[in-house]
Length: 68
Length: 431
Image (cartoon, rainbow over all chains, first blue to last red; front, side, top):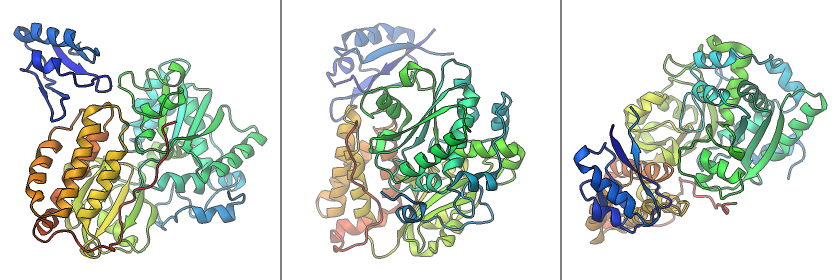
């Protein structure tokens, strides 16, 4: 079972918390909006991913189960 | 508004003659129901096996995405209480093929809408066109004729949709039909899952519908008798720019773009670049474009896309291609729906940087550095594919017109009074 990050670009308003909490997979563009690495998240990084998701003030970031 | 077919004709761009492959574009327009039936024959009863026939035909959507039509039909047909949306909004400014098709053979498109509805078990078709379009009275007249003879099993309603570049995207159209702004929404759910009134919704371009009307009459083997194995059938192409005879023609898949240009009276040797697929497509050097065959995979292979079948010819002289690129990019940036940060900010920045390339001089180098960075970070960042499309349009343009960039850096902008090639029409609101 693996997960990947999915962003709703409409609800995202660039708080930038996610990149702060999960820089391994999330960087910010020149305007502060997240660029998400869409590859599956390895098990050892899953906690970081969950923290980033939980911290998003607009609930724009979610963890999605990889469809096999 | 014109009330008879003779005067309305003048409002519609001309169809370039392209026999012997006229299927969708009958040799002369078939506006009346009697003319239509005399030319195409009666519409046979739809049966469940027709989706299989569509699959065998290899038909792919003509709105731009070129998605297999049978797959979409089957997805909606497997669900209950379906709705059909006929998409004739034609948001690509350089495309007039839907307008020509609907005004040339309105009943063929309506036939297709009926066939599609019957295939997916829908009782209702919402027929979307641009608000204020000249085809509205033509379609209404056609519907009245059909109603008088109780021809159709489904109800067809014509609606004028907002005229914005991204409003014809299927999720945007559905959102507007549901009472919202005509702006794209996050997918999934896609319209086939949850569309108009939350019901499974089949959104099909009007040219695709006309193809369905032909396939239901003449079958998949007939459909495949034109075109190639990978791209069966014909497709409508809108030619504009530096061509003697701009307009719409119907060509079998597999013809070379150079031959299509020659039919329209343009010599590829006189062109610097060709935009294939419209603002959602890509620029190709004219020398390469001339040999490329019209086909979905053919164009993908050269880094482009067929889109809605748009070909715009950029002349080698008399027009500054870079200034045109800048003007169109600014227009595209302004067409963003104001929803997604990367699109709102990124496209504006990209349009600004290209304007700096046009101005040339000291700012040019910095603009090039910015563009390399920004164009590389836009892909897949929006709810819809608008940022992806603009990125491809700009990046391919900068490659094809790279000599222009150098010339502008050294000598500054070209003198004014240049002929405009790329359309940047006035657009309306979101509702």
